[in-house]
Length: 604
Image (cartoon, rainbow, N blue to C red; front, side, top):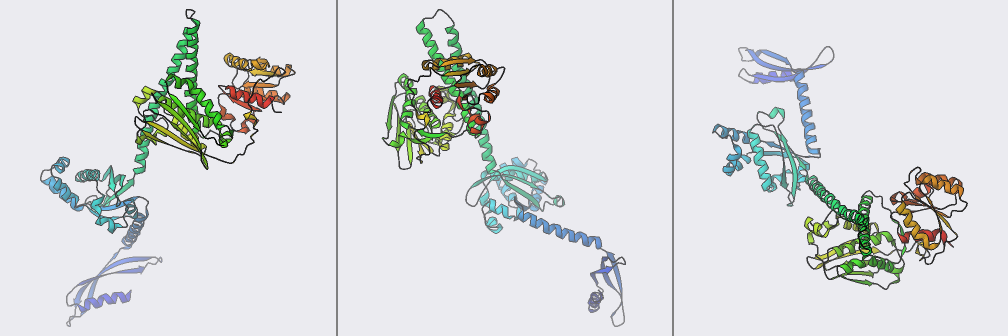
């Protein structure tokens, strides 16, 4: 410290004028801490040789100031690091000159800057050019696809689009009003020409709110969010349209069922008329079941509750079954239906999920019929090297190119006008695509407006893992069950009558339990019961409880669950947990019922 003091004295000695010098010294306090003092030394007196003989010194304790300065430098350094590394696009602007320009305009009587800049665009650009970008961080360069700040600053005007210019105009109007915070949704062009949707906000730090020398601008890339928002809004509109459509679709068969049921109860109609009423009721029932099944299916697909049940199937036979189902519709619309099947043996033993393949074909053929007023529908099935290629062609209204991908989205229809003319709920093709993908296949289409559409889907050929003697392939004819007794536990009389009528030709003896408790009592009192069909929902005691009780004392009786919710049984663990041996989905189909009978009574 002494050496530093004498250095300052020498400076004073060397000067002929009475100057002052300043220096800082750290002095040790008696408590051991060092204090910082700022000294100012001035020549007070010189001798006859003009040498400095006396000096006057002033000392000031600046320890607190020194600490503040150190903290300030530390904060500044931390800010620099944060500014550069924060994962958000930031930039610093100097708006001092632009603010001055705006204040001068105010002095000239300008108050409505929006109107003024619209009438004098040259003044707007003159003011905008006074806003200086001091620096940007790495994230800003990444967002706008520039290598560094220098690269960006040389091309800064290129980031502006018409929307960006409009936002900048609003920002200058906000600056004229001395607002310390501004935000807007705008867009910016990247170096590669992409348009990014951004949310931009700027604020003035407290120490710069008089001068506007520093303004911090935050830029958030919301391109993905905007797309997601648009998709969500579109999805909401589609769902609303779907709900309106499904309401209409459900009411149509319901009106038919209720209306013709009332007419049936009237004695004034002939047998032929009543037969027509019954046919219309049956058609309405099938239509209603199809709508409900579609809704359940799409729900199960999107909640990942749909399981695969693969087995060896005869594709040729399946195509014939589907054709027979639609034969009357082809006839009503006077449409030709052509089938071209490969002669390959693979079609006779193809490993896939039969139910899902059948529904794929049914949905595609149903669509083709719906949108074809005249001409023909054609189904082709070709065996390629590693896959089977299916195609369903029609001569209908066609689908525009823009809709080729969107048509597979749920709730999507060509347009509301077409949906009103042709009906439908907009989920059939979504189900088709989901099933094709579950079977590891692909689906696509080719179409021309007013010429027709062809849907293609391919399914992979894989090595068979199941025996061709699978019991489900037995074709059952002339079954004699006269020595058997079947118990049907079903509280709904129409459901019981359907099963009883179907089983009647087999000469089987049938017992009827109206609830789970009666089913348990039958099993306690009847020595011979060979099979039980057990409904799940019944009064007094449900099918789950009844089955578990029966298995405690008649463990060998096979019990088949009758359920409207097959997803609960897709996992074999669920079947075992409730002691069921098999299950049937309601409404029960003839083929599935025959397979159950074959499984339990024709195992040998």
